[in-house]
Image 1 (tube, helix red, strand yellow):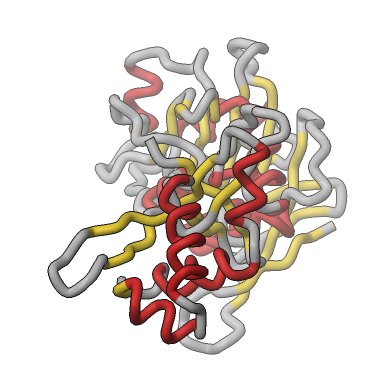
Image 2 (cartoon, rainbow, N blue to C red):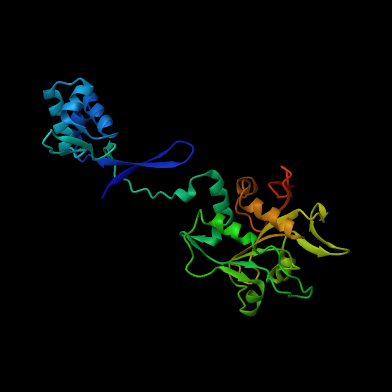
Amino acid sequence: MKSYILKNDGEGYFVNDTKIIENINDIKPIADEKAISIMKKVSKKPYSSSALAKELKFDKKTAAFYIGKLEKAGLISIEPQKAGDIIKAAYNSFSYEINDNKIKFDPKMKTKENQYALNFFSKFINNGKFDGYICVGASDPHGEYKAVARDSHYTAYLGMFFGQFIDLPQTMPIILDTDVISKNLFKKNLIVIGGPVTNLVTRDINNFLPIKFIKEEGWGLKDRNGIHIRDYEGTIEKIKNPFDKDKDIILIGGIRNVGTLSAMLAATRFSGITFKGYNGEVPWSLMVRGYDIDGDGQIDSIETVK
């Protein structure tokens, strides 16, 4: 089994194969400048021993000495040919482990922004598995307003976001609001998408939310600063599940579907901004506004409302 070294150049993580040298006394002959120059050449393409010696300006005895050391270390391979031996690289690097630490690396947790999101969604991510349900409004007329949900497709974007952290679930974690009610799934970790008109679960948890949906002359969101009625305003909230205190409920919603989209983008694409100041407190809530900065008709930026 090959070993690999992991490198981060600031733009991503990259691996290179490496030969683990077991005996420290075996390092000196291959750590020589001449040995390294041979490895650099053959790592790019195979060479005959004579062509290698000529290009590196080694005499045949010197070339043979270092080629022998590198072969013994397992860093190169030699294929006998009628016209002369062909030398190929077996590894691109060599390493010596001072301490065989087994530190588990998870590339899904590689940035601070990811850590902020992982902290916020912690109850829903358990050893790389999704724990809970994502609840969307039904697309059929339902509830007292006979509303049809127009924001359920935003869940696809949320799923792509969670793909950074979890494996593909074995069972479908997306569920309709009507199924949560009919199957009595309230005692689960729930991520609820949309407002109380199109999502009946939002309606049923509204009284427990720090920022509540209210209906006066028209729908609005009420926080300590007043009532928000703009279509492009949304809310992200996290509460202890009132039906099971060991579970969490997260709401991502708005008065209109564009407000839900604004909240969804804040929770995913802009999670580094949205959750940077989150320190595990529950209940927690944040009003957000979405904007179309480039004028193409799509929400592409958000701001938080303090």
